[in-house]
Length: 428
Ligand code: CMC
Image (tube, rainbow, N blue to C red; front, side, top):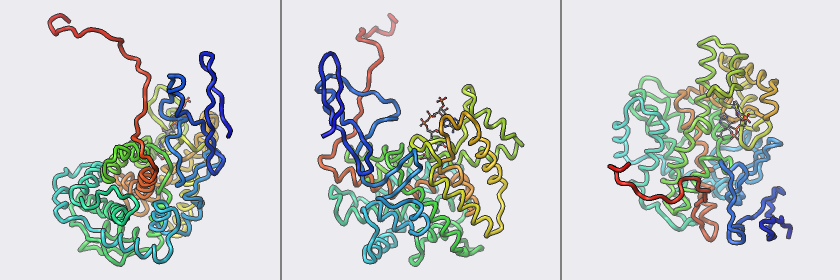
């Protein structure tokens, strides 16, 4: 077996090399501390693998993304969101029978307990929808206790996974209706995943929702593009929290909170706010690029850069093309897309961005498409969360399927005071 050799204080240690199915390699350092007393230090886990996984493959240099081996481009074009959810969680595309059972579980678990509606009344109308979403997902654990399980393979897990995927959509739509002061709309049995969400969002007693297959497909595509992205901040959070053996709802709630941040899923809201700011204040693209490069300024070009992609994010490529096609078809124009394209062109020519390999990421164009669908800006990250949920569940399941389950517990290098005595308050 291939190994790496580490020499420390005259001692030599052979560390095994682990190789993945796409020839990615890692040094297994699990014996390091016992043999040498050393730990590894890697702030922000820039170069640390936390697990092996067979769910999603990314080649950041080449701009490749595959779910269970299937290229994202094919899934975005041809698959339904529920098929992709099944693929991520169970490893293969569903057979017709499996799809039928999965869809039945989604439909039968789409409503939330009526008592939970009172929770919405407790939130101020200004509450951020991500705060509502994470709270309500955790609150599901109070109502659906039958789904707590240590049998991660069984029927109970299947129901729990489908019920979360279905109910998160209902919660999101209800929180929107609550925020605009309209009565909530119950899910419909005969609608597919994305269509049902749009129906619950936009149906009203005075303005019936008119389904549009192109818009429904656009939403499905967006959700598919968000569905998994291996060990990102929120998914790693789900794994870390779940490794304590807490239930799935609590683990997902923590993941949703992590996703909210503007460096992660919250970037989609920030991108639109940034583009709107440029438009409203008539800012020049040149000045924006200069601020993004200025180390004394807190401004970042939201929707640009990625820890893993050092090439065009394949999801951004799909979305940019998608926006262009659907806008043309609908003769729809959004001034923000022109600003976005100008900003992209200027950044991609700028040495600062070129040297650091900073390209548009998934969040750069997703908001523009969400705007066309009619989703309000403060709900963009909620949309990301709905899309990402199957991936989070798949990663949680994969971790629990592994034997033995290891609690996640990083180490540290302590840099504080060395031992000193307690001094009573009057003597300080
Ligand atoms: N605008 C300006 N400079 C940037 C940007 C940006 N968007 N992104 C990275 N840089 C610079 C950064 O200042 C640093 O420069 P230097 O080497 O001179 O110090 C260098 O590029 C490396 O950046 P980093 O922050 O060390 O890279 P990271 O891997 O730690 O962070 C990131 C990745 C996504 C947090 C970062 O690129 C960023 O803040 N982007 C904007 C927020 C954003 O769009 N987030 C969504 C990511 S995609 C959705 C998801 O999966 O979460």
